[in-house]
Image 1 (cartoon, chains in turn blue, yellow):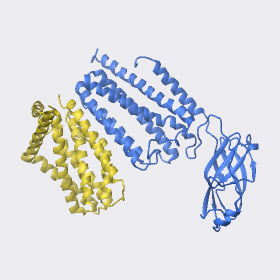
Image 2 (cartoon, one colour; image 1 turned 180 degrees about the horizontal axis):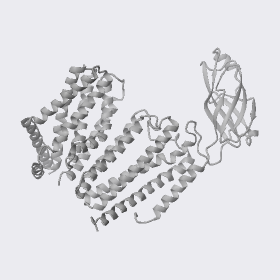
Image 3 (tube, one colour; image 1 turned 90 degrees about the vertical axis):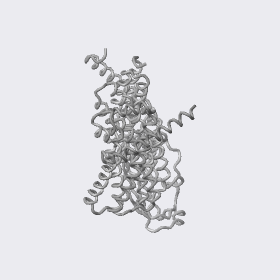
Image 4 (cartoon, chains in turn blue, green; image 1 turned 30 degrees about the vertical axis):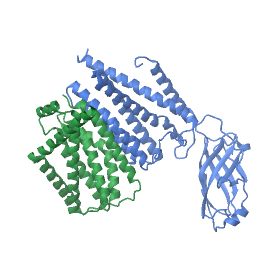
Length: 353
Length: 225
């Protein structure tokens, strides 16, 4: 199979799809910001809403806006003024008393129109009560239930505050890690094969796969650091996942130091095969167990990142799975080139025929 | 048949274990060297820190433990000449050889860690509130360190510049164990209120089991030259 070319073509097709679809599909429309973000009870609230990828002009006639208190109760805008596609103004009358016994109540903003579909900005507005009286609030509350929301039928990626456009990194950062693990796994398989048959070929394949696995790991780390800069505010924040990753890479750097410590190729191959298997097993608690037991900024503190319902929607899956397969196949392709390069080098040096 | 063979293995392990112990007592150079190493490290740490708070105590204990263990174990496979190693390989099963080494190193590290604890408490006070839990951490630590370092020592003994190789191979491998241990002992000295201690202990046991299994499988490929 390794000498056939169909899987290389598949890798190219899948990665082209990943890059084009991943970078070109627009984000779903969302709300970037509202102004003012806090208000007192009894006020008339004139809210300026700034949208992202939104088409307020086109959805003007079907535009409805709510401030949502909880799943049953919401307050709808009395007047909506669309300025342009990205900005509109909505006027709400905040009642004297709220039907809650909290001093400060947060409300979600829901914007719905036929063109963009329904958009939510969680905790958009904070309402401060002058005096708390839930019963009076209950009486004064005029409920406008949120009904008949429009669905967005276009092919889009989810809009997430904090993430914004960087959500596309999902098709690079995460699959690169997946591909790294698959490459290391392949390397272990060749190391085991080496120890069963002592063929120099298997050892060189294992070394090539490890080398490319490390490359993918470094790329995963860099894409992750860039993502972290955008979302967490720093390239490196000593998060447990970042640390464990760095350690994992150290383990594999040590693999190459170990290789270079031996002159005798047979001894080099045998001992590095042994270390490779041991290191892969030691890697499992490092990457898959400890980070899941500790609090972390990274998604997936209590489970698998990238597989929960919150992390991926169906459109993202459509690009994410091909990306994983594509990056893995590309990794194996590059590794096979690295292996052939080593073999040619050895032949040229007269080490093998 | 299987029973006989495993009896044979146990007997070999006991013999090799006794041999290591005897060598240690007769030469006494290695053990006294490592003891002096412990005392001077603690002395240096005490004179440079002066005031050692509980969090620092906790971390320093394990750092001393880490370096002492590496220094104690690195010699496992190099203190005896190559010819004598060859002689052992002819006589004994490689599995028995590595298991005896691991057991011997566990014993050594247990003694060393208790010693570090005592002498460290002597100069910097003893902040340990739950002694049982701390002893458990020491035990699990000795087992984990011993397995990992013995295996890495076996690898690095094959190369010439083995002290450097020992450090770069074993530090990354030991970090998961070390972090869990520091957490476990942090709760033993009362730094954190942790309810997930059983989880940590199980985790350490699981790591130890995996590493022992790997050593068991892989060492036969390592020893012959």
